[in-house]
Image 1 (spheres, rainbow over the protein chains, first blue to last red):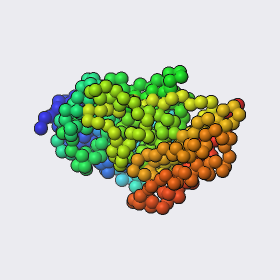
Image 2: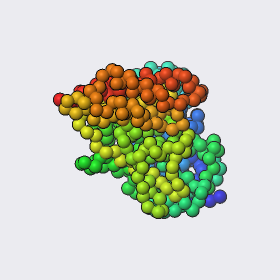
Image 3: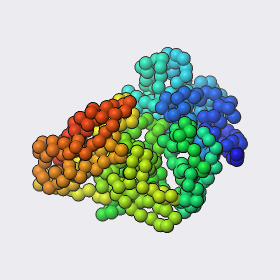
Image 4: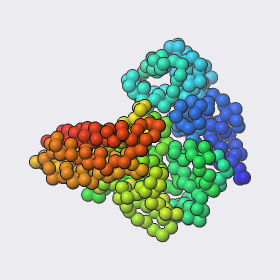
Length: 154
Length: 290
């Protein structure tokens, strides 16, 4: 079994990991780097709890091999909060009551960030499409959409 | 996942040779379909060859009189946003928009979507209706085939050992085009139960000068409905032509029962959706005609 030396760029930090090519990005983030904000759900790319940003766009870390993202910019939920405290999207989710169990939340927030970075004034329908790959079993989605709408133009 | 050796080829020739030398090697593009199979141990390749490290397979280029050349590694997202695609073949962008969810569209590739040969895949029906052809590269050279000849069975295609799908080519459409892709799904953008693509082109007098009908999800491969196309070509289209064409689509379909829908339902819906797709394409073609 050959392990590959993988240089990862996660949240602006460089990490060196030695791993077999079978290891998914999700496994490496959680088990090697201790970044457990990204979750495992369906393991097949359908539920969205494993969502991370790859060069700013949402992808499924459970379907990416760690070797495949060498050197490319990965952003996890841990990468959002800066020295000044929580990211505005995180604050908006709290303010709007858009979090219940919290399991879908990291993926939701990252998908929302990618949307707002590209389209700062999304309409309700555009938010629904952008978040269509993140499933939530608790909230019924309405407060999540409101949390994103409340950020329009900010 | 079982162990595999991981290869990052620098050139297409290198990729072809690894595949040819190792019968059990598989290509990695977007990984959307492949990785799921690997995780379930439904596939245990000896080598995984990452095609994305080969440069030059993600171009989209329109050449006047020749048509659109799309590299196989273009992601669904790239097809959706491409100005060239939206201008010349908007039905392809429509198909891309109906594939799964944003994160999947950000990774999955058009080459992978075609090569995986899932009968319900979203690109083949539109590409069939557009008379697209595929560029296949092997250690021995290159060949081009019509897309409808690429598929042989569920998840099976004509690729020989060492051969790679590298591009899609779509010839220009005559006169005034209208194309539609209708996808019947249980949940928005889930795997198609039935997929119908219809492309019609009208001349200045309103006669049909191109007709393409492609079906997904109703047989072991995507289908081209040549009999429907013959009925439509050359005519000033009315509802009777459309109805006959839709009946031909129904006749050629051989769907099976599965967890998503019965064969009987698919057989009924392919008629309904082909009618709708043709009506909408006719409407769009007329709207394009001054």
